[in-house]
Length: 210
Image 1 (cartoon, one colour):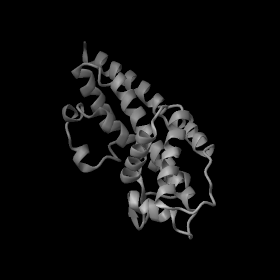
Image 2 (image 1 turned 90 degrees about the vertical axis):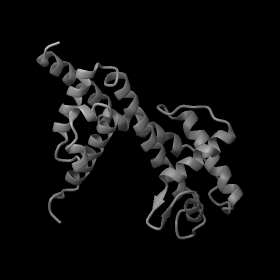
Image 3 (image 1 turned 60 degrees about the vertical axis):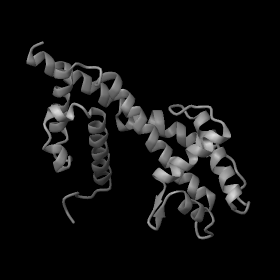
């Protein structure tokens, strides 16, 4: 395969990946189904929040969302759902005053917040983030990581140039050969930067003015 053929093949693969990881596509295929499933979950909002009721609600919530949302569909036992709920809170629940399961329980008990609804809203965001990352890894694995080495190296070089302005120094200074081992991570990083820039521009702010 000539260099031009390799470059063309790499560009085609990148185009396919970016089409399946475009923000609009992710919103439609992942965010909205999860948000819809989360919105349909019912719990007793007036019930006092105890540790037992907290466990019950977050367990039922995870089962409800995972069994209904396209993109993360999965049947779970109560034990599996509780373990997943704890993992979600430990890994993704974060507020200005702390993070993790214990902080989520305190927030759910806080009369100054929206109780358990506040926690479930945060969990919804965590589930969306996890589902997006899983989807992006799958798309990259099926299209990029099955390509031969010269193509993967070319993909890394193209993406590195595409997102050069946004990448941290330790990534920007890597060789394409090094980055070819981490294509899904590179795509995730670049897409996150694109989303952040899009939000800044959408808010009418200049990212270079402080």
